[in-house]
Image (cartoon, rainbow, N blue to C red):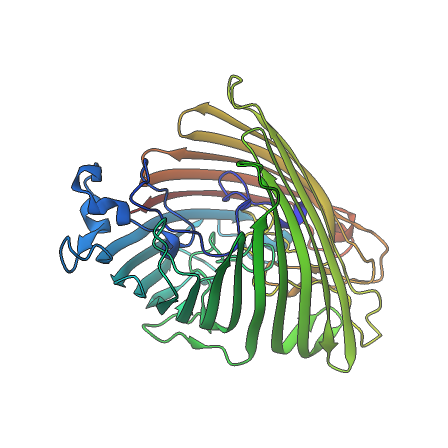
Amino acid sequence: MVAGLRVGAVPAVAQTPAVAQAPATAATTAPPKTLPLRYDEDYRYLRDPDRRTNGLDPLKYQSLRGAAHPDWFLTLGGEGRVFFERYRNEQWGRVPTDANGYWLFRTMLHASVRLGPHVRLFAELKSGLAAGQRNGPRPPDVDELDLNQGFVDLNIGPVSDADGTTPLVLRLGRQELEYGAGRLISVRELPNVRQTFDGGRLLLRAGAWRAEAFGLRPAATKRGVFDDNTDRTQALWGGYATRPLGTAPGSGLHLDLFYLGNQRDVGIFAEGRAAETRHSGGGRLWYRTPALASDLEATYQAGTFGPGRIRAWSVSSSTTVSWPQAPLHPALGLNLGANSGDRDPTNPDNQTFFPPAPRGAYFGAVGANGPPNILGFAPTLRLTPAPGLTVLGYCYFFWRQSLRDGVYNVPGFPIRSPGPGRARYIGTQPELDASWQFSRYLSLTASYAYFGAGQFIRDAPPAADIQYLATWLTFKF
């Protein structure tokens, strides 16, 4: 699935359920991994002092009422990231080159307070800073200090003896979202400042189903101190449900179903600007075992764009075959995708596919173009030369789906108009990523990408080939 690949140094496409996971329990035998959504982590197993094997474990379980009340505890965590990035010919030469590159700094600290089995408070602070940018920071680069997340969970219903959860959770406040493979809604991980939303969610567990319903607005990222507010010009609502198919343990096959609604006071496309209400419905089949991972997702969009109608679509697939017992543990993959573009800019109807809050680096780290109006594929090869070291190579090939529509960036704004030409090919993007997981908490990542401009880009200069280099050191606890 070209339309959602983020693997290796750019974190892998999620092949996991979309909604909140069941927390770890006292029966956990290994320390849990740091999760993309930090509020999904659960450290109740550390109430047993014999399980505290790491120097930071005392931060993860601090009892608030003693051994008689094990569900009253405080968890602390955080992240520090130093990111160096250098472009040559960003946006194919439209952005002046910063020959020396620049630095991005991310700091995040969070606290989770469980007040018994039915109440949980979660708060997270963020700071994003930049240095050395000749052209000034981009919108997601800088937010000096602000509330990234702050919500309350009200756990409703009987508490499970198996995992300490309840069948219903009401979550109110500012919060991050990530659904499915992150093609439609994600946390915007690779950029310096992550995306959050203000509102409410209802999380339901019913048999094999995990489902959510939500109504939210995005939090606007501003550069000052505690000045982020709710963006009243946009709204997001809908539901997402997932369940395993089959009853055999470890069968690996899952089904996701979703409906997403989003409204924007001003939608911006190659054909113009107008108020927009968009409804996205679809499903996802995904499968994961040590030897095979596959993912197929389809989305159809309807709604209104000014006086016109919206009729858009997306189909994406990803397949990876692994040989975990072979030398270097090779894995070969093929990703395919098609996202619709507008068929006639003179007509008020709109056929451009638009994801409401996609991943921050949709096609690898370079982020030259985003998902609207794209056809493409990417073969991949992943190797593990040593424990903790992963090397991933892949190459994207991009075409325009509609010759009457242009090229868009990752947030979904047009960056190249359709023009009078009939060229379809946008370009070729090989990328090589390497990631070293030095310990449970510390990792180093490096990424190099090259984007060779295709005929469509060359027909409307500037059309210089893009070169991209980045490396980042991350400490998470």
